[in-house]
Length: 318
Image 1 (cartoon, helix red, strand yellow):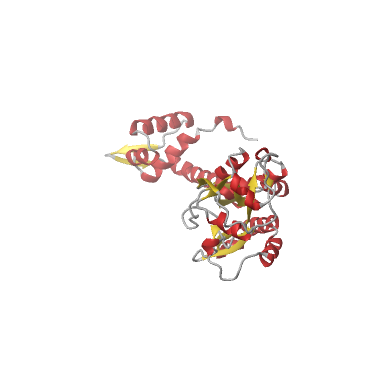
Image 2: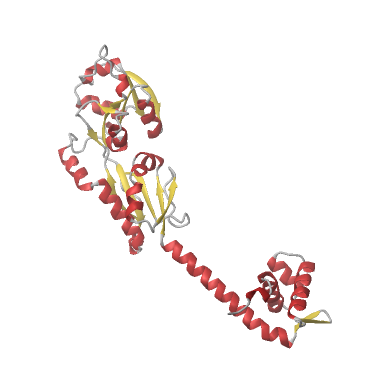
């Protein structure tokens, strides 16, 4: 067993290797970002520790001694071995890490309540969750896979429909009181209606429910699904939102579904990734898990049973 305590410090050996490679104290100092005086001090300390002279300076030239020529290959070999070991560790870690880009709405209202099942099944896999409303940059953004809302037309990328939202009204149970019943869609006229981005979802749903002629109180417009949901939970009004985005709140009874009627979005959430990405097992594994969790078969069944009319303008739906 070697006594490693008698070995020189790595910094000193690194300085020695740089000076030997450049045959210049000035260039070595520039490379390792220290002063020339610091380089000279480290070489002097190393020479004293080893009891040998490593460099001779002759007419502004730096020459290695015979002892330095013997030491250099061993130092280079040792540093190469350390470098290779570090790279191997990094590659192994990268192989078990997946960078996933998600919209805030999907991450907060769908994935957050299900990600535990993924970690339970695959505890050795690390997820780097990138939350952004911007579409992922698969070339420079170091993203492996994304989940984004749209029509499935991302040029040059593989797009697979993951989730179709079923829109229907919800509210806090505390909002429902005997003196102000809500048993028929027409009675929504007595409540403030909350909506996101615009009023189109409400118009489509009210038309479907046969209540489009009733005058309603238009409430706040939320350009964020999370704010819309929390406003409904706080009793600020009746919100129309994707059933899949409030499932956990329904189960915890913080929200209640008001009517059976619903409309389905023509757009949806898509899994988006470069076509060659599925060659990486980790990407395919996470894609398959997402598909399993959303139960796309049931969503397609809903599409067949929907009230949508073929060719109906998209702005009348979602």
